[in-house]
Amino acid sequence: MQAWENIAKIGTIVEVDASARALAKVNIMGRTSDMLPVLHFANSFKRSINPLRVDEQVMVICPHGEANGGFIIRGVFNTSCKEPTGASATCEVTEYEDGTRFSYDSAAKEFKIEASDKITIICKSATILSDNLSITANTNHNGDVSINGNLIVSGTISDAKGDLTSHSHPDASAR
Image 1 (cartoon, rainbow, N blue to C red):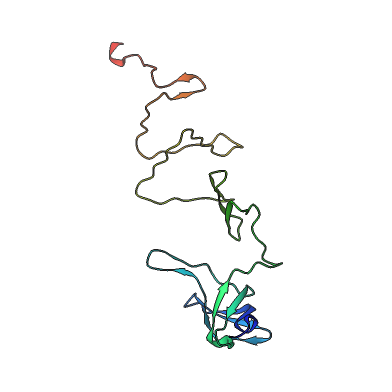
Image 2 (image 1 turned 180 degrees about the horizontal axis):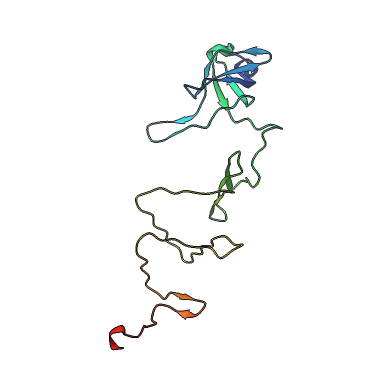
């Protein structure tokens, strides 16, 4: 059996196959490999791909000690690619280059989406069930809420002047 150091080697991506998006060349100790497959999550249930980047540090598994016959495992944290802040034994964090973050903390039972720009949700139907729902639009100004369609409520609607649900207007025909 070969020693571990002959099977697994740390290297840096030097070229990405733009058409395949799952192949890359790696510099391992000054030698550039052939295009190698990159391990991604893929099966009949779900497929996920993250863009490969030149200079990304990876591990190459070389079953016979030869880098050109191996495959790439990515995601080696290092000094230029640190773990996202907030990650812990109970909190999973996904962070993108623009600062957008998804996190789930199983201890706090809290799922967060943090974005500096916009979030778009596209679906046929959406349901939010909550004991308490708060929507704040632009905390620096009075935000607008736009609704295309009917607003149906089971409670009251009020504004700064009071209840809007049960107010009445004089009958125009009675004038």
